[in-house]
Length: 158
Image (cartoon, rainbow, N blue to C red; front, side):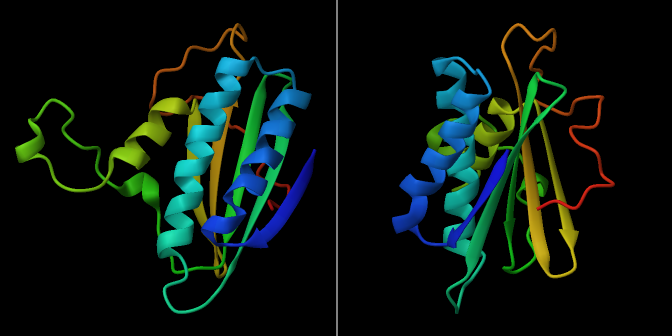
């Protein structure tokens, strides 16, 4: 598919999400699944906007590509401080509001909306890859990790 690179700031969110939406639509995802893809991607992007570049303006790049005709891989890269949001502990959603710690619900939601997700640090860049299966592709969303590789690691991403 294709890629987009913009400044990592909230004013760019609509354009970045529109890019991902177009990729999902072109790949034949249904509207309900596209909304889930948008929401998960938005959560990842807002974390980058808020935390990746504490003292400078930086960039964010999104690459979208289909894997095996049934999975959309959305790779989000930034050159900000190293941070793996997937290591953030899941909140205790069964606890009362007064007993919960602040933060973490967005990452938890992102994990639940994706079929697979991976983080890696390559050189000075963070790369978070979110993978979404098409409904009816024979894969069930279980919210944790999938058993198969979402993309060919020999390729340079992004």
